[in-house]
Length: 463
Image 1: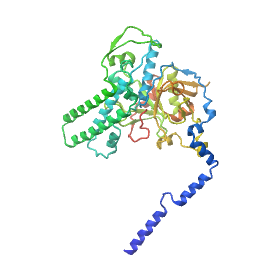
Image 2: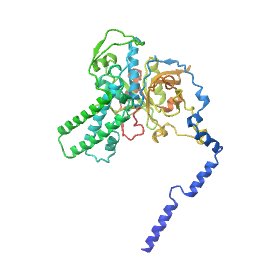
Image 3: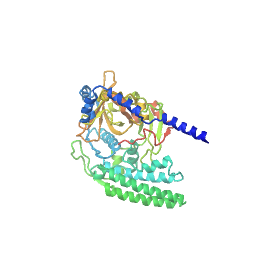
Image 4: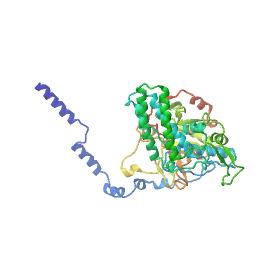
């Protein structure tokens, strides 16, 4: 017995000796490394009283970007998503209204109501959460999928798939018919209250399933729950219009033609034409996975009966070629980026050389795109509308331009100008009309996708 105790004590001492906590000796070594850094005190004095970005700004990169583009689509009004995560909708609507203007030779303009579509986005996401809770009620509350449903009942982010599913189902209305409200522009409190209610309802539905209530009773109760959510949305966003009178205008805002009465579906058909679904593909650059394969993200959709986000993974040069073909024909594209990296919001310049953090901090940042994705250091966080590209004499892209949704007072009068290198490193998603997609890529898009789960690093809605 005494021998066993001695053995245990020796094992404990050995474990303590090899423990990975910060020991006094390790701390001393760390401190010596810092003391060996040149000009540490001077740098501290500078960094302690200034913005890191201001100190790391590369003056040469900041002033090397000209604003001339060899291929540029017609400009349109810059919108402002304000304190909301609806960039996916703003970018999607930018494409739709640009297509409408192009179809009418720029003689007519349309501005879509974001709040109308956002109303149904939140209602549909609420139903998606509640029905998914019912579908997975047999799983324990600790199951990863169930936990995801309760952690993320709704959000205001999304992808172009949401624009397609919601517009196809509910139609569209003009901005003048259903204008922005405070809660549409400042979504945090409204979303927090809806999330809390959905979590409460989710627990009740799980209990009903456990008690073996009938499907009819569960469906009826879920409908009552959605009635409460509907009322909350009406109070914060306004009740969706069922019909309205509208007069189209030219680019200067002058009325064209007589006033006409529309339902949302009629207005959608009048201004968009046929269904959006089926007219596009979404491509992605994700170097973690094999190229020319399709992937889908489970539960990454806006409506229960809608489409998960499905994408074809392609090298950047193939994505750029389709983007250039679309822009040359005057068509803007939905696209998304990691907008928090190497971008100056004041000037609207995005350049991998814009900030020299390495010199300031005394260490290199060496991860490539795949490594940044797999470690959650980078991902698709913000959707913007691709509007222009500058090509060299050989037709290769030099820089790109996107229409943002942070108001005309932000960035470069509402636009972001990005070098081609930045585009390659921080662009992730692109939605391309099928008419600009080569037949070989269309065939690849029809492959059965590999299903990814909600914990994938790229499972991030554009905001």
